[in-house]
Length: 258
Ligand code: NAD
Image 1: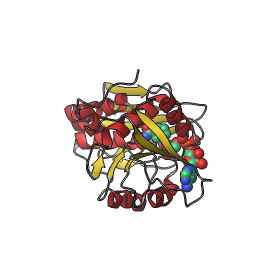
Image 2: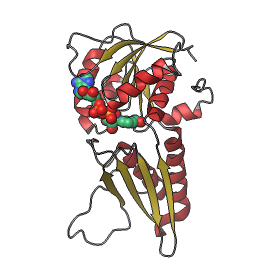
Image 3: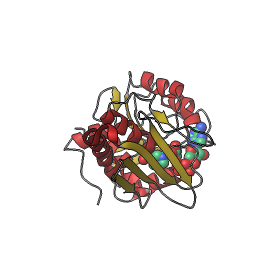
Image 4: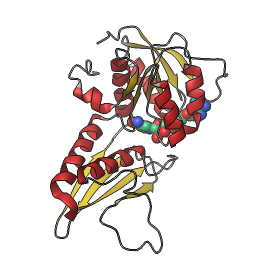
């Protein structure tokens, strides 16, 4: 594992809610471990790239993926991306980038959600086809994508546990004359409002009992800390795709922030 002291960090989406949380964490628990070298937001001139950065942390918008990759081009910097809502084409461009540099993506950087994802798969497998998996989430009203990236990860985990094909089993919204629920779908419901940081519940609905597995994030700082731990970890890795599973599996995931 590479020592993180003096790691030079680029930040993409630096002025957003998460970008500001990352800067707070860099000035706080990660001070002396990671140093902000380049901060980029939508109004930063196109000529400003991430040359000299060891790792770039991205919390922006899916539509900015090409801009992000252009600024990363030729730098060799690792990428840690928390941006959600990318379509298949934008995902494919990230995969292509991972041939040259380490790319760590997570729809949710909280350790609690990483554990929840494993529990959901285990529960769906154990309960079997008599229990219908459904995913419910709430976020603040400014969130642009629905269902949330985390809800989709949790739904996919339930489908994996149940042996359902993904994304075919995904039932993103119900309205009007939907017909009866089929046995091979995972439904999603999204609420938006207030300043809810993120709440996810996976229901496993049986005939005479049901299981509910819930995670609630209390402060966005949890995602910033997780992303910076991922940034410290990923600079020591070779080109390829990485995620929370790798970070959690690696017992030496770095010192915990104070
Ligand atoms: P936000 O809208 O507050 O911030 C997004 C920022 O990106 C803005 O400052 C915007 O100006 C900037 N931006 C837009 N286009 C850009 C461009 N071309 N170049 C550089 N910057 C650009 O949103 P947020 O709440 O900070 O969330 C950002 C993303 O992170 C969303 O996709 C959200 O779903 C995701 N998110 C992920 C996690 C996680 O744990 N993975 C946690 C929270 C949020």
